[in-house]
Length: 251
Image (cartoon, rainbow, N blue to C red):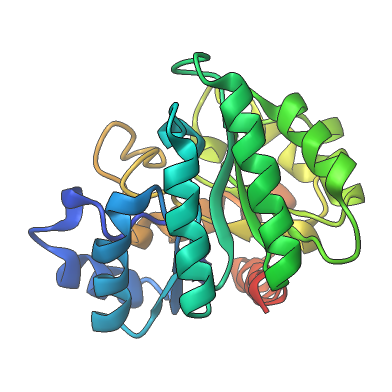
């Protein structure tokens, strides 16, 4: 399995990071992608990448960290993109769940980072909490042959999933698919499996029966099994397809 979205550098893992990654390996997770948050998370993320060869860093400014001085943060992102190769630009997007104070700045930061993705020919990892339509419209208006990516932590409808796929993008399915009232489980059977990638968003959003606890990449097997059951295909086939999708996404 390929874990396409885990914050492995988070302080929640400081006490048992090596053991946590060992558990993931035992569950069959062979590669893990780490989305960046802001300038303060970069050092910790790169340290994890250096120490654990199965981990891969991406670079971006998370919408929840877009404030008045977001240009300073973006300067750091661009600086790093010029310094070395990253697997993707992320985690970027819009988040209107917690705070709408910097709505315009979030949109501006998203557009700037999409332009960089095209310039550096990198995929984008999109965060769109309580903002699917606005995020989708911006991505659609800027979409061309140089842009690809994933709508991470997808929790929309089958119709929205189809819109994402029609753009040529992937859908990141995580723990929400196991939630009783999450809504996503009823749509998964209608989502093209060739466009699904697996993710945990660890340490957040642990799948049932671990909901409410710290999430970790080992739980990717729970998510994969749930999707395989909903798709009525063998687990091994689901793993093969989603791993191929992730490889194509990050190429």
